[in-house]
Amino acid sequence: MAKIVKFFNEQEKEQAELVEQLENLVEAAKAGNLKNVMFAGELSTGEVATGYCHLDLPERQYLSSHIQIDINFDVVRANIDQIIEFE
Image (tube, rainbow, N blue to C red; front, side, top):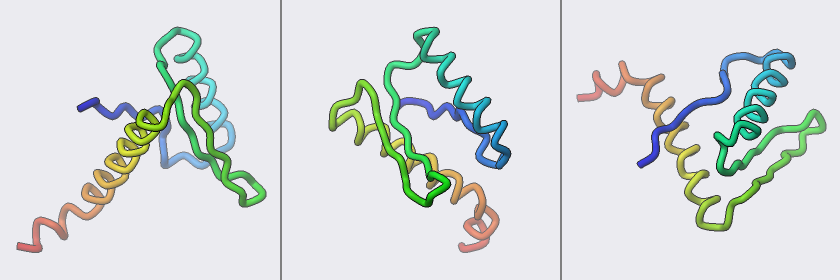
């Protein structure tokens, strides 16, 4: 299974940080270090923009499952004390 590498610092809320992280992603693509990409982002209008490049249906499912695993890991990490005490 592939290792999850985070491009974004999910704690930072500043617009400048968002732009910097997107620029880092573009630089990775320019350097040939990004094979494909998918994204989802909430627009200021409340709409959600989604997109992908160089991905067929199974590859989109593969990447989206990694996002879900990453979320699940963060949920477990945030609640590890309660999980340990559950026994």
